[in-house]
Each structure stands twice: as structure tokens, then as C-alpha cells.
Image (cartoon, rainbow, N blue to C red; front, side, top):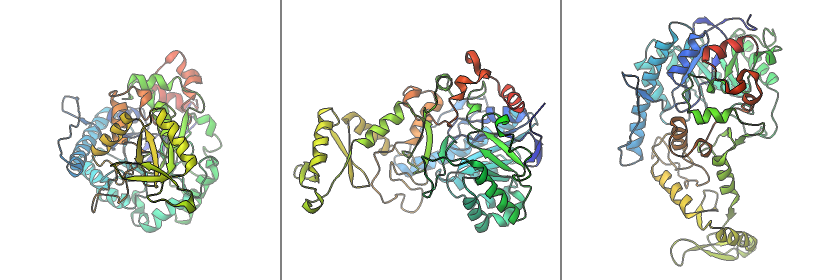
Length: 469
């Protein structure tokens, strides 16, 4: 017996269980189709989705462009083809059951072009679009034009209110639900605002209640709200289910679907999920998007932490009144900067340990890395393919003059490179790559459902969730 009842989502009655639409190649047409076939809402990632040919084979993208703009156009073209192929795969896999959504990030490069291209090429195959990582004002207009439902991802009532008043009120009939993604518990990029403390998680109930109260104000009292972030088992949400104060609630599962047989992530990643402990996920701000994000605290993140710790301020000219009195040669002979004496002592220690390459940051500081790491950073910046609308790592912007106008930030990283590598099991081992995860990921190790390394099918997982466990 299920602890929840079916509800109408994207024009059909389904279980109120939504597969979280994770980023690059982590949820695809096969996993989304399987989730829909089990009676829920499957979501494939439309973020640089893999192209699958007519034989079901993955076709990798090989960049041939000579500069960022050419590679950017190649990436957009590939992303559209990939999204269409994943939509077809999801449609065929669902066997007429459930619903299929596509997830896009508003801050990904040329999001509108990719979204329109996929919806045009996959008409009738996609029932809804979820979108977060920014303020997607034009999401409603685009989805209404293609007659698909839209699901904005927000972290507060204030954000949804702004979206509604500026744009969404004109396309209310295609608003499928509001997705509240808890910024302290969800994996991937999170919407913590400047007024919120990343170290002090807030109770999601009153935050979701504020969204419901606003929906009542605008005449949408029965519109579903999707709770996302920190959802593991439904019996832990019994106070939310059939609660008249909150109204209709659906639940999004982001972390648990990673560990299924249909999940496309490599086996090394799946094995890692079964070994994690509480506290192994870090909410950090190293992402080139500038957003907070949550990922496994592995060697990849530890190197970024240590890189930023080897950091000192500098001045272009000697400024005794501010303490910048120690000269440090930098670059060509006769060119240098000025450090504070105490910082110079720390720099000497870093140099002795082999961190001999200083790199400038946009904040008028220097970080110190090994020559090998410096070459890697510069190579990754030079190889930028423009995957974000704004990238602080490379200084890329996807419009106007194609530059943010700021110095590229060596404290960040190429997100496209590491996410593609970990998703496809190439390059460095998984523990040396960015591994997004929600803060409940440690529960794989203690949940009896996964005892002895058991990996369920998507259908088995959905059935398990429906029992409350």
C-alpha cells in the first residue's frame, strides 16, 4: 500500500515521485524512461546531453573549433542533438506510462537556444521542463509556445514571487508546479542568497508554506509544490503528506536514483556512494558559476580548498601605509608586486614545499600552486568551450563581447571537463573528480535496502519509496 496518492502532473495522473534532473550525462533517457515506466515523472538532463545514434551508441563530441566562439557553437549544436536523442530514448523506454521532463540550467550557455532546439526537435516527447540555477524569466514563454509544462526551481517564496510578477502570470495555464529545492540539503548547485547563512540550515516547512501562501494569493491554491533536497524516504515526510496547510506536495529524489541499474554513472562512482559517511558532502563556492554547490568532499575538492588557502593579497606598488613593503618578483624581469612581510614569510614556506607558481586572481590576490597545476589551469582556461553563460574560471560570457571583463579565476575549475570525465569514466579516477551529491548520500551505507551492495532497478526503487521506506 502506498503512503501517497497519484496526482496530476504535466497533464497525466502519476505517482507524485519525480526523478531529479541532475547535470551532465547523469540522468539520461534510459533512466528517465525507466522512472516514468514505473509510474512517476522521469527527468533527463538537457545540460550538454549525450548524443545517441540510431544504433543506440554514444557519439562523443570532438571539438574542432579554433577558438572559444567556434567551440561554443559546436557545443550548442551537439547539446540540441543530444537532448533530442535522449528525449526519444526516454519516450521509447517509458512504454506509454508516466511523464517525461527535461532539466536545464538557466546559467548554462545559450540555454534558451538549446531549450527551443530540443523542444522543436522532440515535439510530443517531452511533457515538462524543470529549470533552476538562475532566474529563468523566459522559461514560461518558451514552454507555453511548445505547449509543455514548466517547473521553475526556486529556493524561496521571494524568488518565485519575482518570477511570477515579471513573467509567469502571463502563462499560468502551463505552470506545472513550483519546485522548492532546499539549498542546504540538495546536491549540485544551490540557491543560497546573500541574506542566508550557508552554515545554518533552515527548516524547509515554513519556507514551503510561504510558497503555498503566495500561490493562494494568486489564485493557484491547488498547484502542486515539489519538495526537493534531502528527501530519502516518504515516512519521514508524513506531516507533509495530505497536509491541508501545505496543499498538494510531490517529492523529488535526486540522490537515490544514482544507485540503480539504469543509472548511467560509472561503477566506480556507484561503489563510492555505498561507502560515504555523514559529513562527506561539502557545501562550497568553488563552482565557476559563482553559485554555492554541494559535492562529495574528495581529493578534487580538497585540492581546491588547499589552493585557496595558499593565497595572499598584493599591491602593484609599494604602499607602506597599508603594510605592502616586501617586493616579490613576478613575471618578466623588473616586474613584481608588493606583499606584506608576514605574508612573505608564508610565501617562502609555500615556495619551499614546491608551490612555486603564483597566479593572479580577480580579487587582487595571488595563489601558489605547483608548476604542473599551473599548466593544467592555464590549459583548461585556454580550452574553454563556453559551456556557461558566465564563467569565472575562464572569463567567458556567452553574449556581447564574450568576456566577463574580469581576470580568469584560478581558484575555480573547468566544470565541463570534470563532469564529462566523471560521467563517462575517463580521465582521473572518480575520487579525483567533481562528484555532486545531496547531503543524505551517506544513508546508502546504512539503509538496509542496499545491504550487501544491492543495486536495485528503478522499478524496485520506486516500489520501495512508495511503501514509505
